[in-house]
Image 1: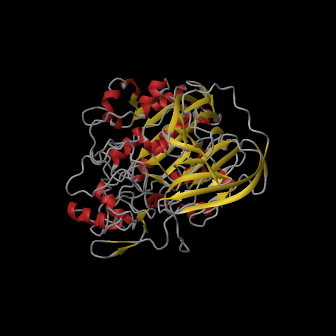
Image 2: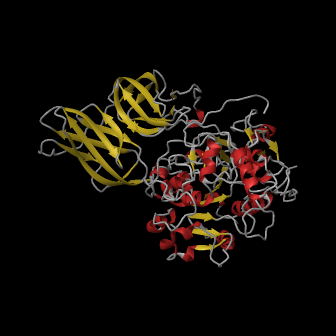
Image 3: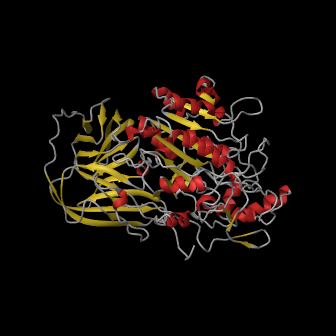
Length: 633
């Protein structure tokens, strides 16, 4: 890096209409800020008005509000808004505000003129009970399309002070009035609606009903096949920290939050280690376990919420000293690769879409992160998981009649498939016909029988998973040359691009967790505990904690004919966002609170003008890099 740059783990606040892409908004980079891109300042807009909002804040945004004429008319416990509202015609004063975990409230305001008139409410027969709420729209048990129109009236002997709309128990709309008349965009699927009022006597009263919301995004319906795969144990800085050098060599903007010039970590003896270019395809293993990950976050105070990102080298050195490894200073934690070694990945990530804010779901090692990737929870496990009773995305797909398969790359020593689905045996045992060898994936591509959703397990037993460690592909211990794993993935992706399924598919590649390699961006803090279960297998020597912190950044890319060209997402997300995409596409409910609050990944795609209907010709991934497992050149 030629100059020192400060980066923030941030979400963006942008307010746009449906005709304006978020990427077209010039976001104020002050911390924290709200930028209103649409409706434009002093503009005249027709009713209803569509608001889309994101935030720019160095700390996690806890809520967003829209105020019209100084009254809160919309509230959501998230870092973005996406809703359509009916506003009273005339001059309106708009204020969009956010609040973050630091307790800071920030906003921007503007004046607009709204034309048109709000539609009259349908004929409603108010319940004569005092007090009561009558929901006129949507109808009970109805199936509706987005945006959903909400009309409700109250019947109260005393003055009504406010009305709220709750969707799946979360307040999404608030107005200081005695009736509701608004429209908003809801997540497709089964939704529980509750509309409540509060009167001047302090009485709260409500009515609830269930509806089904259909997919409002015809573009998303073009995805007939979603394929996802996780390789093993590599951090973002370790693989893509120098992506900007590659991008600028292609004439692309340096949009990636890569390794800063002043990055360093101290070893156990105080030796300061800075990032260096690895010229070996295999190195000794590191440890990304629960306690080690918390120390990597803050070596001196691992339970704190203050990110120091200073424990990676110390942990790598400590492990080497304990295990009899060569690298007793832990230097390998600061090693990185470039396009020289990973030519296929660099090409695909720069041509298609990638993220520099993609995190593993939980601060521990692979097995539990892989559970999150298919069930949005580990049900309390932070170490080796047992049997889980939680639903996986595949059980939801099965219930909805949507086709799916899990393709496994290896078998365990007992001959059983090596797959995380073994942790959900209560469901898996009845669907073994859909847990099939990866050879079937290539057959399905040839026959045009690729399922709607496919998960490809890494080659953990055959040395094709990129896990650091032994260089012997015949070893049952995970880990081998990185280029062997990259070439394996290249074959899987290339087969899809060359198949008849390509033009209706998306392939999502990520890494299950960071593997103990250095990354300079702190994990997301304050994320939802998926199901309220606290860690249940911590030992006396483990760092205390909860499931409200993600793991570290990992490499991630979206390869599809619909992938935005040369796109870099900066929206924070973890693996459960893939579940959210699947849920949105096939109208499935959220599995837990974690996937429910994720971004839906639609920002990675351009469905109107698909850039890659004819896929590019990627370079052949070389596999000839020397392996020096017992020393660092």
